[in-house]
Structures are given as structure tokens and as C-alpha cells.
Image (tube, rainbow, N blue to C red; front, side, top):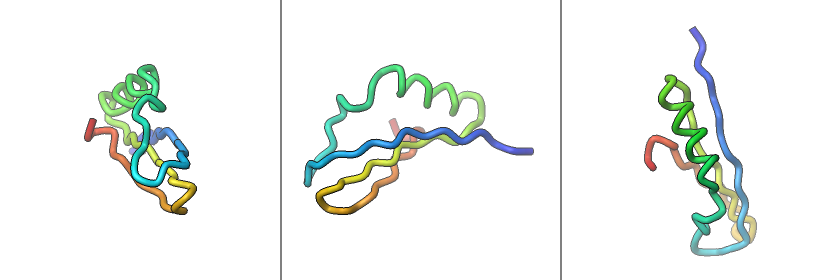
Length: 61
């Protein structure tokens, strides 16, 4: 049995924070729906100035 995977990919030039306003309400709702149906959902945030990538599990918000 397989599992559905869905994610949002975001990028920022900020060095210390990610503006949460960059994640729109419809995107959050979609990720929540994926989780509610047994899928895997997450957000990938790329801090381009630092060349670092962070993973945020949708189950955490």
C-alpha cells in the first residue's frame, strides 16, 4: 500500500526568520487535508542567503 506525499517549497533571503505570511491559508488547509487522509505532508524552506534548507512537518502546525 502506498502513501500520498505532498509538500510546499518556499524560499527566503532572510537570514534569521521566514515570514509566515508566505504560507497562504489555502496551502495550509491542503496540507492538513493530506494529513487527514493518511498522507505525508511537509514544507521545505530554503534560506538562499545562508544556502540552508529546513524541513517542517505539516503535523507540527
